Image (tube, rainbow, N blue to C red; front, top):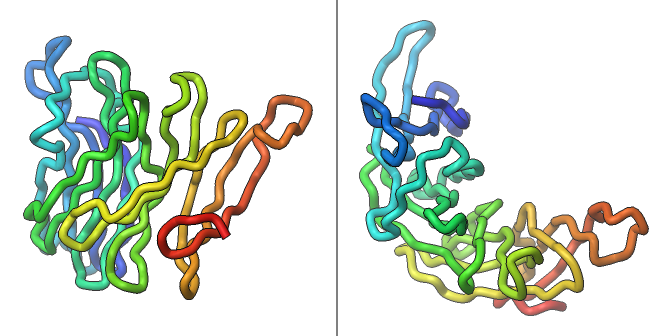
Length: 215
């Protein structure tokens, strides 16, 4: 078992732990499973804890290395549910994103695969919108495997993909976060499309309407 992330809950006596659970005895080719544990405590006493496996059931991955889930983001929603975005790498080396939502007791409500094109799709941020739906953004490889492009998508409360947008850049680019303000979305990220001269990343900010169209 390996621990990847600990997130503090809005409730000061609750937190979530994410990690990988390896089969025992471990053999090359056995698939580690992503888990989340919800822990509640009072003072120095453990009050309760529950663990559930979050791996999607329909991707069919079998990748034995610890970097299988290298980036995990979580959000406690306004209705006190937990939504998680991460990615898995398949045997071909392609990173496939997915989003999963669970209730207060970590029972899975839905899951959604995110893969735009045949290359990598890596979600790097998730935020709740004013209408209760979810904004996810990150990077994907659409033009070529060695060129990263930023993407954004909106997901409904019940796990349906409402829209997706890909933003072409001359060189690598990636969104790191996205948020709603009034009737607009703002995305921040990095790119080396602006010609810094040293092939280094520049910081950029992008503004769109609520359908993801540039403004």
